[in-house]
Image (tube, rainbow, N blue to C red; front, side):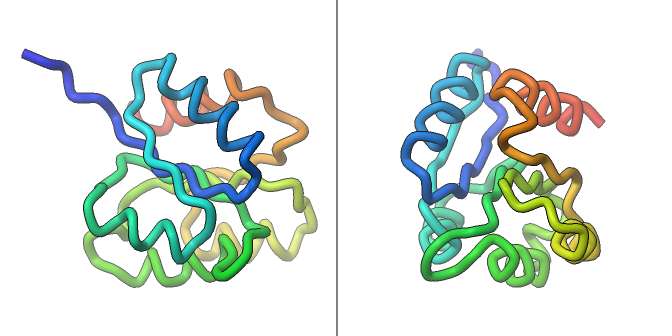
Length: 126
């Protein structure tokens, strides 16, 4: 019997950052689906139900905040934990994201991929 892998949707437009996190999460045994913006993420969600979402804010077409608003409106996704992973640290943005029900808000430059993985793991064990 194959152990069920936890599924992560990584929504990030920066290819370099996406590659780093994809590599780390796969090494740790996660199934990872990549999306480069909110529009792309909703396309991927048609066939992929994640256990958690790692979400950037600044992206083309549909940014992380718009994605989050739409994501939270859907009954099937409203309880999926979302971790914002951004370089933006202004208080209003953090407050707005928390009001939309994110589980955590991490500043990219303050956390290593290993630390982010530990946050995801802790969240999924709750």
